[in-house]
Image (tube, rainbow, N blue to C red; front, top):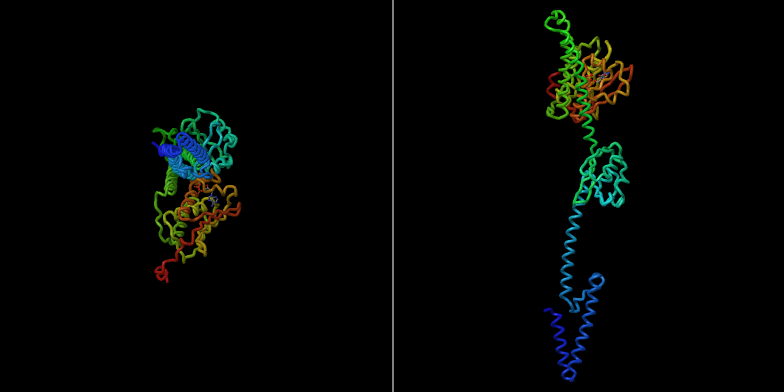
Length: 435
Ligand code: ADP
């Protein structure tokens, strides 16, 4: 039995006893019970006020009435408070985790209105929370494909690729997923890089097939024309052309493999101090052996005091490409100047020719794979269109950059700029030896 119950009995009993002394036992007992009921009612009123506004009103427990009920209410209230704090903590952690996601997340209400969105939703979709809270998402993203996706209840889990309403250059993969039964959530991911890579892969396959088709068509033509009755002299005449086409295919495969190795970083850089004078002399000697070398004048300006820290094979292949191009794409007798110079900021290798030059609109695309200024002429000269792409990758691996300047009718200058940290003084022992 509760403490209140015993208290009532004690009060009524004491009042009855006092009443007995005055010969009014029943009246005293009734009066005591009545006053107790009034006091209790007052306590209940206070309890109600306290339950409604606990901060403003004092707890009736202090008055000793209904304290069991008050204590129980207090305990449940504290339990709820700590549960609420815990849940608020979980919610906060969940929100900060989703807010940090690079993908956009928008929680949708029953009518497609924004209930919550993370930070990336603002940058990718232009959906700002809480500003756009309760705005229908189809009023914020107007793309027709998206409108169809959001209105189609069977399209849950399907993905579409659309341009971002914030930046039309960004491509987004959008999907609506369901959660907790009827809840819907919009997820969007930046696919620009992936779409670009897919396009590059498609273009690459198309380019390689196109490039291989020409030599293969020539070879097939000969094989279809000739048989074992064809006289030997006809075979003899055709052989140089056949050899040239097969060399062309093999050059292309070799350059493609080089490019792929450079891109994947499969081969680690083997950096050594490179004697630029000796390397450039070797390249010049190779250039004079080219079929297109015709009375070209190759001049070398050399800072013989400085060497370059680089991967010798890669550096030689990059500079050879530039020097061979200067011979291949300039007329007979043209002057080609090769320079190795060092200033306070960098070391640079320049290959400048006084040929016909390249029109400005080609310059930006010149280092793309298979890009040629004059396709017919370049292929005739055995060009694969991969040389400058290789140069660009080699330089990138050496933290260097390629700058191209050209003027029609005046000539072209390719300059490779290496960071000053890659430049070293010629080893001392060699300095002494050369005295
Ligand atoms: P390719 O194997 O065809 O030579 P590159 O990537 O080395 O391929 O060069 C791309 C194109 O740039 C060439 O096809 C040529 O049209 C042009 N080019 C390169 N160097 C020169 C140059 N020194 N003068 C004029 N055109 C050049």
